[in-house]
Length: 145
Image (cartoon, rainbow, N blue to C red; front, side):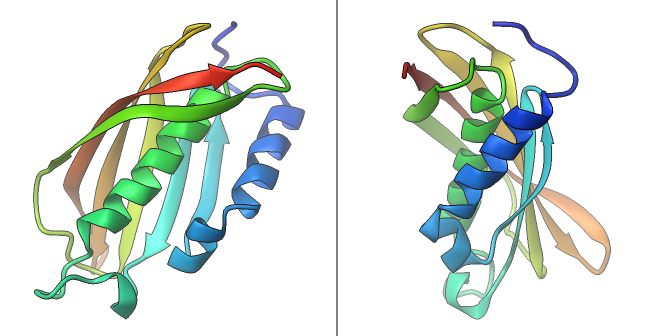
């Protein structure tokens, strides 16, 4: 598996098509904003329905978009026809997610044929200022066609 700076156009198209089929991401209002080889960015608005009792974005929103960003980053380095499933994912909550937008930047730390090690950083955007609110780290399992 080759780790390139830019994914082939068909890889990016496959990831965009897969993302568009995710009902959960649609429910959250999430958008796939960048696809690169071994990296993916997803943004989601912090909607009233995804806030916790103190008004911050619920950790579930951070986890959902971080897991998806990391998973698609893993998929971007795999051969055509493969899919991925999350085997395990840990989240570190670093600060309250205040603002109107969350941005998840997923990336591959170590590609492999049996396991792909990934991480994602989540930033909250408030009044143009970004705050690092969470870091996820986990393992994706490639599923052969």
